[in-house]
Image 1: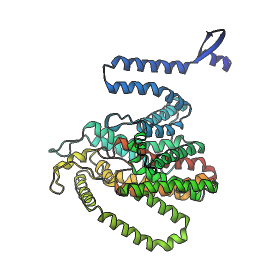
Image 2: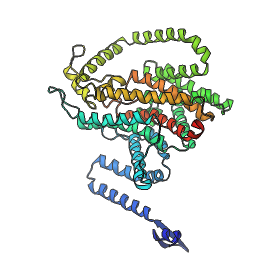
Image 3: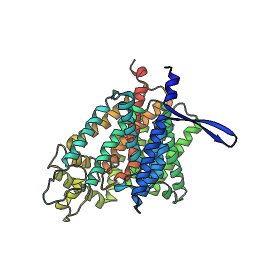
Length: 472
């Protein structure tokens, strides 16, 4: 039987008479299946809805999600744009702060795995040094979640299961998003689309803030602009392109410099007291300038150390109580973590165990406000080792690509990721911005915390796209 006939048998064809014209309509077998599934889901939701707002929200999301699903099936990389749009502008939150960003990440992961298992019938990852520590970190997260079901302290309650699942989802799915990005991003045009969409949407928010039009805070989700990763990468990406992308015209560079200036005006001048808003971006700027002016950077090292020391002392002096309590919290949480130093206490548990340990004479629940301490407490020293290993491999890869990529955009992107790693490390020292803690930044913070993981994965994808030219 010829191929055309095979295709014909897979479709349902019927005529439709509309006014005086007759139209031939062909509905594919896949469309029929999706229609049946969608109808079944909708009927089930409607039947179960007896005044529950949660179910109503799910019903609306299911209706809106059908066209999104169909688009993702045809254009998987469009999901990265949806992560921004959904996370930034859809304020609806589920249990524990579950939101459109993490929902889109999970949906993309499911479609990617289904494509490998069902369509390609071949399960494989790209070969990159970044993937190994990422997989190890995910495995440790799974083990830590299981270990978290053990009650380590008989006089303290464990974290509720939903909090443990939320904490696990953050660690597991953000790192999985990096691996997925590296594997499904095969065209630089999609990376450019994501980068400039991020810069464009971020710039709109910043310009409204510069103009003191505060209603913009109601348009954008607070989980975005109240997250250090938003400010860090809104400096790293435009500034690296302005400095190192030789394909840009002068007026384009000036626009990017203006975006960075406006971002710093808001982050430093308008919200100076919030250190996470401007200190990591400042590290990004220092890194990019040092890379651009290497000889001057070497000469400026003593002055940079003096200035950094002065700023550190000044920042601590202006907020002594906050820094003092943070150090006390780190000591207590690390002391709790001695119970299971290698694999940790599981997700969110230390927050509840902390109540039986005194901090400044009080028995209260608290979080560490440190990414590194959180990782040790939840996934142990193994988790911290693999976390640093991931960042080291991303930093190493971006360093190797700085001068080896020929395209102006790609080279500028590599510089931006390298500087972004430095800024993310600083942000991790300040608060749990890169991998949010369930009882601090939480699932709502994934709206912006997803950014570095997508950018990291895209760098690996760039390596794969240029593999023949780089390693031939």
